[in-house]
Image 1 (tube, rainbow, N blue to C red):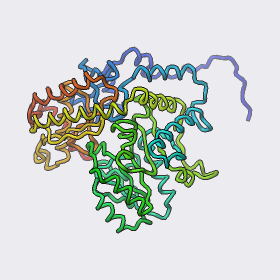
Image 2 (tube, helix red, strand yellow):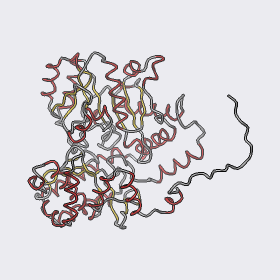
Image 3 (cartoon, rainbow, N blue to C red):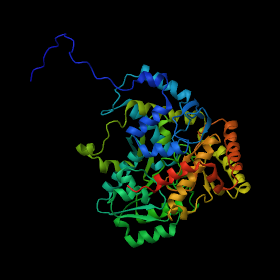
Image 4 (cartoon, rainbow, N blue to C red):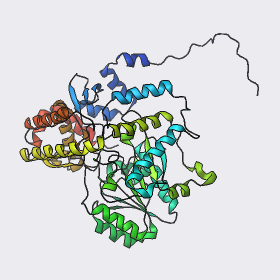
Length: 487
């Protein structure tokens, strides 16, 4: 095949024009237009719901710890779903990224030996081995999200035990929404439309070591691929297991020669007040998955740390190409991951999360005592907080659908807190629970003000059901109609 020489002639056909330019976005973009385009081309019903709740955004970053909504309302940022260890656009990380883009000369996509990937692999294993010396020769597989990290973990344990059938997981666990991760995320809303999922997933009560032991003996250890758990359930509503649960899992795994995967995507790297919540709780897993904070709130990244023999079994010799992802290990993500770990260490944010976490939980417990008609329960683990609401709507109002009633009630609470100046998180596997995941470096005065704003919001209602009359009836009816819509 010959390649024609360039003629130097101008092309006769004008290049196509894109509807929106990057310059427009950098100069500022109309929020109303952004939402209307999202409804037209994106996840329309989600944006419609957020619009009805007056929390659709888009948001502007005022500081790493504060946002402004489309109406200019200032919000303390306790959202981010544990993926913002330093808040939004933290200047030390942002400055490092600029330096990286200007000075780095290594290839960006790492489908070969990579200096940045090698460095981050080394540092992650060193951090883990400092607390779990048996992981000193472990390896790392990178991905682009927590769900990808879980997918890699599932392939690792399945390849290690090819004759086994069963995966053991736990009620209200959350591991992602890709196919394998969804299979071990027991939530009917998420799973039902996509069955059949992976077979032989056994769902057990979280925190119940006796139930786990009974099921292991009933199934037979040789038939079990692995135990997959979160050391603290995040999307399940910040559920901390009984203190004897993780040590019991460790003992059962040793006794029956079982593999254990710890999903530390939310709890790992400081959020729980510890580098690894599983190790602190008395469990030394064979595989640990990480993601959210590793990207510093700036880049997508996931990491699966596994014992060396597991990696060798899955990726032996020329079959080392069995698992890959085009953008995993890219230099920008690796560099940001490197700097994120350094900032966590330099600013002593893991210890700070533990200290502020205790203070925050104390403040939440005081709110529960003062407003029992609004809050039924509070929970905390480091800088991971949860408020469980009293019932807002009676299920009979929504044709007996209790789950939809819970979801709408929580949506009203998220709206109320937004209007009160606090941006919070929904809980995918605990529909009556609101979570707070403030940055680990949030200034203490702002941290305390966050709880003051929460109290002011609750004072305006006193009882959870009193949020109902504050919501325009027309909007409430539209919300209910969307919530009950069956596809």
